[in-house]
Length: 187
Image (cartoon, rainbow, N blue to C red; front, side, top):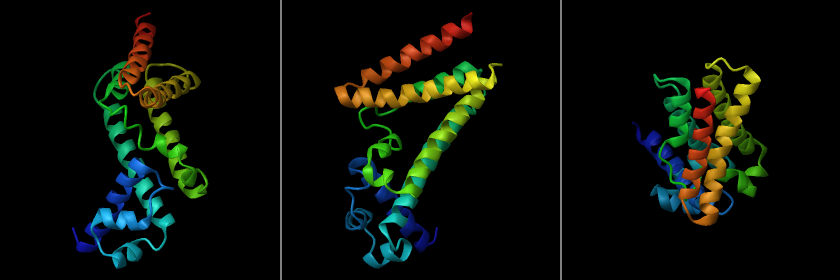
């Protein structure tokens, strides 16, 4: 990896972590610079504006999250077990979803380009889950409904866990939905 690539990667990684912890609006380029350990000239060389840095960091967060989910959904397993694996995979419920939390950040929602990146994540996520569910023979509209419900259980589970300070809230929501999925396929 070249020094230029490494410097850019360090800046993006620092921004990702700070955005997840503090939010985009509450994070300054100076804080990203300090966390990355690179020189000020490097920051502005790679990212002339905070908007450029935000697009890169949010895009990387979205790509990381989607890649890991697609890997779970692509496993060689029956449809229901792949969806269950997505639902039950280990998550830090109290930290919240790094992408989902961005929807509560006014700086993200006020920036059409960044908001689009976040919105496309959820569209692609629902599409991926729906494709798997449709493999069971369900009509496309029914598969999409179930995919929306699965994604909503995860996002809602994060919210409940964070609001109550109890990670069991997410696990309970997931267990309830998994029970419904399995009972539906057992019929």
